[in-house]
Structure formats: structure tokens, C-alpha cells
Image (cartoon, rainbow, N blue to C red; front, top):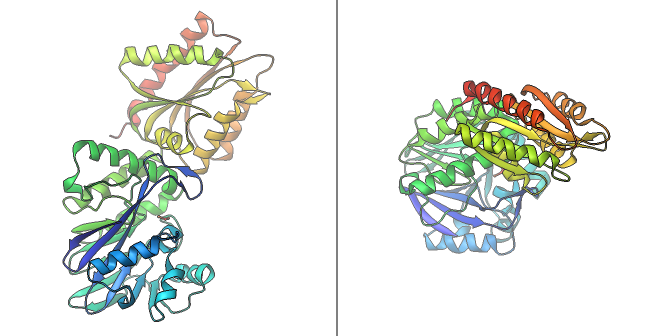
Length: 407
Ligand code: FEO
């Protein structure tokens, strides 16, 4: 765990978490940070905590002491969002201190009680304030369904700091550099992908609510954005607000100028056509990523399709249906409400078709509204005329996705 001063009277404590499945699902290859913030006036508040793993709250206490804050002197736990990656330490904290007040929304209050049995709770609503003394005044701004329905922003007026919890967060471990103005170009690129991975894996389902939260952030006068995951933005907080706005467009069909090839092959027949498509894309100078299912992690798959303006689905028929690992991936994209992508599918069949029918069912069931070019199916291995038809449709896809590119 690392401690950093982010403004007068405000510190961040941050730890890298690795080798976990985030939410018990997402394999996050580059880890994630959990950030807590301590605001000191005459009274002390901790905004968002840490996960409740063995040894973690104790590490937090040790770091608090090193910045001159006795854990027992904390008066308020501000719970911006109840998910246990931020609140999991509350029961442990109860063991070392009797008298503290949890500050949260009414939706969070129910969960704070049901998850941790806490009842000394101050429920806040839009615009309520908490004066900590010495000029430090916190105000509270609910942003429901920024992930869970309980979420709120906390804003510190003196330093104009927005504590945004999941909003404006990113996956990815932090090294020495924790502020936007310290990041090298490589680190900026790293956090761009990790923010996309985070948005697409965790937040995409809630895009309509995130758009409202973006507007709420824009209505505040902000010098610093201090999220619960990832770097702190103090040089240009508007950048991450604009980035999140762009990601909300990715969730609704826009994307970078690249194609994601979501593919699977049983015995290499569909793969032969994938290889041909790669030649076409290289010749046309179109950036692309290959996602072979089931070998790619769901986290990588969702993030890569999410950020692409065009998607090619290459999958054969398997037992009268779509090749199951690709069907599973598409269902996951549907659950995440990733809509409106420009797309094209091709694939092989042996003794029966059926993949196309299931593809349509998945799209309809999830109301995905993907904009498809007519599919190409071929019996057994692709012949020259099949490859020519696929090539023509790939060129059509490149044209179609042009109107959806937002970099
Ligand atoms: Fe970082 Fe929704 O918890």
C-alpha cells in the first residue's frame, strides 16, 4: 500500500490487487488498484475503504498512522458505493473503534445494514453537506446505477476534489506514477486500455446512468478527480470525463478505427477463411485484433470488441447451432448491452447449418441492434468463390464502420 498527498489535508492510500477474478468473474491480467482517501479537518473522514481481505485492513491502519492519522480518530466513513471492494473492511474497523458514523445514500444504508449489520448511518441526499472543520466541507451527489443503485459522488469544496468511486476508474496496477501528469506516454496508453477494460467489463450495462453521471460531473467545478480505481487526475480532469463520454459511445456502437475478429474453429475450415480475412485487412491497412474463443479471457474479449468500430464473427455450426464458445461470448456482449456495432459473420458447416439461426436469436434476445452485413456460410472448407464473397463483404464492413469511428 502506498500513501500520497493529493491536496492540502487530503491523502490517498492505494494498493495494487493482482491474481484475483474481479467480481469473481473477470480475469484482470494487469491487476487493479483500490484507492481510499482521507480528508482531515477538525474531524477526519475516510472516503471509500478497501477490500476486507486478511491483513488488508491492518495494512490500511499502519499506513494511516504513518500519515499521522490514528485509525481510532476517524469520525466518518463515507461509503460512496457499497460494493465490498470499497467497503469490505467495515466489520474489521468496527473491532477497533466503536463510535463512528457511516455516511451514504438511502440505497447504500440498507446494504450496509444487511452486509455488515451496521446501524449508525447518516443518510444523505443530493446537495447535503458535512463540515469537517478547517475549511473542509464535503457535499454529496447521488449517481444511481453507476454500477450499483446506491452510488454517490463526494465533492470537497475547498480543494474542488471529486471522489468518484467507480466512475472514472480504470483497471491496471499503478507503479511509481499515480497522477495523470506523471504518466509516461506508454503508461497513458496502458491506462486507456485498462479504463476501457474496466468500463466494458464492469460498467457498460449501466451506460444510460453513466451518461447522467458524466453530466453531473460536468456541472461541478473540479480541480481533481480522485476515483476508487486507477490514477488521480489533477492536471486535466476533463480528459477522463471526455474519455468516459467516448466509452459511453463505444457501448452504443461507436469504436476505434479497428476490427475485432471474434472467432472459433473446430477443425480449421473456418480458420482458413480467417487467414484470408487477415490478408485482406493487412492489405487495406485496417488495424485488427483476433479473439480466438474459448482461449481468450472474457475480460479481454469484451474490452476488445467494445472498443472496435467493426466486428467480424467467424464461427462454424456446431450441433445445429453457433459454435458454443462464440455464442457464449456474444451472449456476454449482449448482457453488457454493447449495442449497434457494425458486423459481419461467416463460417463453415458440415452436415447441417444452424449457426445463423442462433446468431439471430442471440441478437434479438439481447436487443443488440448490431448492424450486420449479409453472412457467408460455406460447406466444409472454403472454396475460392467463398473467399471472394467473404472478401467483398469485409470491404463492405470497412466502409460501413467508417461512420462509427470515434478515436
Ligand atoms: Fe469498485 Fe462497483 O466497485
